[in-house]
Length: 434
Image (cartoon, rainbow, N blue to C red; front, side, top):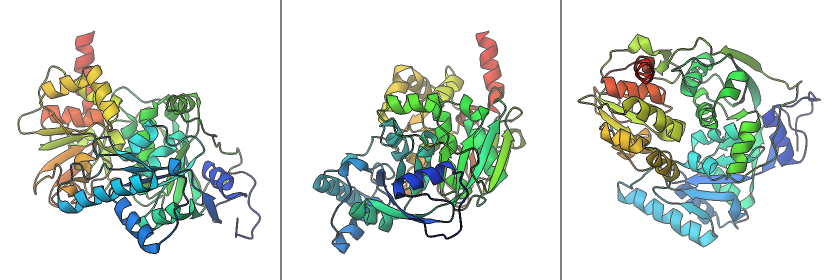
């Protein structure tokens, strides 16, 4: 249902193809479309208000219940009566409408959605959390929505979109040892800037991306919104299809046309990339970790929808196995789901982290959303975390300093008691193993 009168170019980006397929006609950047929604995620942050709006409007519920999940993950455990009451509201609404509910302790919403095969290639998804763009690693166009929009999807199963222009990103080269997907994400955040992709789709490709695990790809897709993007999308390859099939969701992949119209193409060669760190106060304030090495840290946190997956816990356990977290450092770890926690336990990662003095939190958003009272840091303290945001007050006091890094950088820093380059400890481990 395009409304723009100009003749559009023939080629389409991934976002344009998905919106075309869901709106019943060719869609190009700038068009307004009304699209069928394949999946809706409502969490405990914005879901309760959506339920209130839906009920107050007296609307019929027309969304297919199989296309919706309610997930309690931000305020876990509920720390006051307000959030406990909101959790009750979600549980009652799920029961009333026969909706699937992931209750407290199941895990972080975005990890659960991908892990449980709730979205797949070519899908159009919306969710009440800014990092819903994580699903883009699976070739799903996923867009964050507010509570009123969620209520509208409850009532109609549809939503309107202005088709975004697309920025194409080509990751070239091959990652060096000790450098990870999070470093690629931070490198791109610096290149694009905090608002450089406002209301754009970011489309990722290139050989360095193809080499990453799906877990690494989720990390990169997760941070599209931290450049201001409406969504982030990756091309489909055999690795994507295997993941989706294993999760029970094959989908209908959308690939860009060779003559797709991009607003801008960014080429980043990662072959000489170093471990990076985002210093306060913004995600795009990025430097090689060596420039901040030696700064004392008081708290470290590994988890979040960006980096709480099994391979993240594995690299932290590898760094800490047989060693101890530095005195004076609190090292919190929250697996991104119960399934990940169980897998980490089976391979001995949980045992190694516990033995090193790390503090295990329930699978949840944990200190990343510490405005809930979980893992708050004090004025004057410094924290290093695998999270995706470091603006003042995000993790407690506005006078605290928040640094973002890869799971390896966070674990190495917890071990050293100061910001540290993970390659130094990884080199020692590899030397000992040889």
